[in-house]
Structure formats: C-alpha cells, structure tokens
Image (cartoon, rainbow, N blue to C red; front, side, top):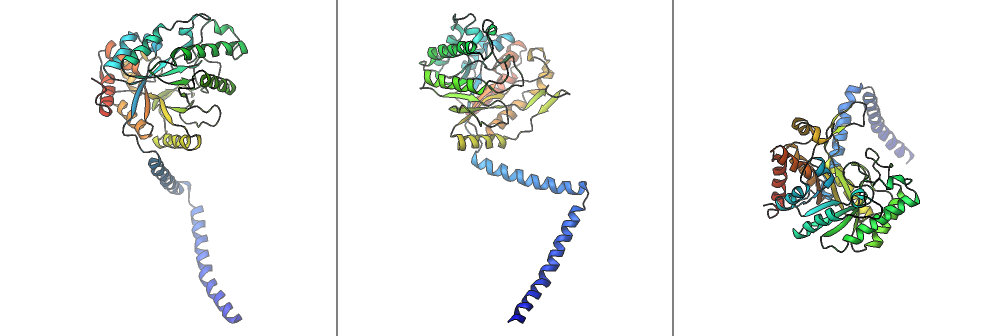
Length: 376
C-alpha cells in the first residue's frame, strides 16, 4: 500500500513539476519584457474590461428612445446677447413647441430692495408656459444658472456671508417665491441651488455649506410638500454621497469646452463616456432610490471669451450645427429621459442677429423627430 502511494506521488510529481517550471518560465519571460512589449497587453486588458462594463451598463440603463426635451431660459442672458427676451421665449414655445421650461427666480432681480419684490417678468413667463401647456421647473435659492451664478442683490452683499442675518434674508426670499407659485398649474418642480458645491467659477462665497443646503431643503419641503424638490450635482463626474437627499438628481453634460483651469488654455473634449453617466444614474436609482435628469445639456459654445465676443468660426470650435446632433445623441445614450437643453438664447441670437437659423433649425429638427406634434 505504501509503495502504491509512493508510486502515485512520484507520477504526480513528474507531471506537476515540469508544468510548474513552464509557468515559472512564462512569468519570468513576461517580467523580462520591455515596457513597449507590455503596453499592448495592458491596453488589450483594459479594453476588454471597459467593453465588458459598457455592455453591462448598457443593459442596465438602455439608451432612451423618447427623450423628454426641455430648455433652460434666462432673461439675463437673453438681454446680454441683445435679444428681445419675450420674443425669444415665445419662439421657444410657439416655433419649437418646447413643453418643459427651466426658469430662474434671480434674487437680485426679484428683490432688488429689501422686502420690495418685482415678480412681473417671472409671472409673465409662468403665465405663457401655462397658456402653451408647458411645465415649469423653477430654480430657487442663492445659486442659479448663468453668470455670475450667485445672483445676490446689492443690499444683501452688505451682510456677512452665511451669517444668521444673511441666511434669514435668503430663506425669506425662497419662501416668498415658493408661496407665490406653488399653486400654479404650470409648476412641476423646484430646482434648489444650481450645482451648489461647484467652486470652479462664479461670484459666490465658495461651495455652499452642507448645513445651509439641508436647511433650505427642509424649508422648501415645509412650504410646499406637494411638489418635488430637485437638486443638481456640482460637476460631471461626482456622486451624491451627502445630504440633503432631494427628490431627483440632475447631471450636467458638456462635451467640448475651452479650459481655463490649467496653466495652458486650450479646447478639450471631455473624456467621459456615456456609459459612465449611465452608471451614475444606476447608482442613484439603486442606492438613493431617486430618478435623474439632465439639468444642462451643452448646446451652445464654451469659448475663451463671452459668446457675444466670439466670431462665428470661434463659436463653431466648441458648438457647431454638426456638433449639436452629436451632443444630443450622446445624451440619449445615457438613458436619462428628461433633458434640459442649454443654449436657447444663443440659438435665437444666431438666427436673429446673424440671419443664421442653423442652430435653431437643428434643435427644431431634433424636437420634431421625437415629438412630431411639438414644433410647427
């Protein structure tokens, strides 16, 4: 019996030892490769991993086939470009047939003097949306879309930022705005504080403190428990890990921008794949139990100066008629249905100021493609 076991062990050794030797030789050979011999293997490995992740995520969050398009509209930016802002706004409703409007309640415009409110322009916008059967998502709070991001009235600037007195004035303003519009049939949601943790640009006091965001969110839910309160993430790659937890999370999507955050300034195409946004949306749906939306889908230039100072050729470097459908297709591939397009004032400006309806018609074609009854 002992001889039999010894014989088996001997035979096993004669098989395993040469095999182990060959594996060791292979490992030694790979380790001895030069860097230029290893890189192809590394590249192939990561391409396989990325392809597998992309395939998996695409099945979790398939591309949206019927996007729900909306636009962000800013009176301030329309005026900056020299547009007749009312004509611009009505053209979006009448000619493009937009049914989802993201509007602003700028603090400095609505409360230019303490406790003196002027709602005339915002009332008109909401009224026109209601007449056209469009839904409104109204931005509220200190930080709202368009430069300078934080639209603080001059009288409030005299108060110590984030002090009890300053916050009290801000909260009063939010409450007044919400009480005015919460019963309006056009209102769909509130968008509280645009990208509040973004510290890359804007005339703000820095990233919004978390405790203030929680206080604002709780105030909004108390004033109007009947409408959802949405909030946007502060960049293109982050995840919502902190508080508060809003009723929906917004993503921004930019593709080609002029970078000024590096020592050398240049145009850059963000190297972020659509499946990464799908993965973020899947994370939020799964672990936060919340829907997602695109609060800013780039469809206007981002150049080295204010858009109105750029030549047409310079504008086209970051946003052209050819680039617009690419951005729209990219957004559809994220699987996120509600998409607020960014650039409505610019499309109109190019059409009226330069007699160039190209950008406007590109959007009209897209809206009509997915909702044939929307645009005339």
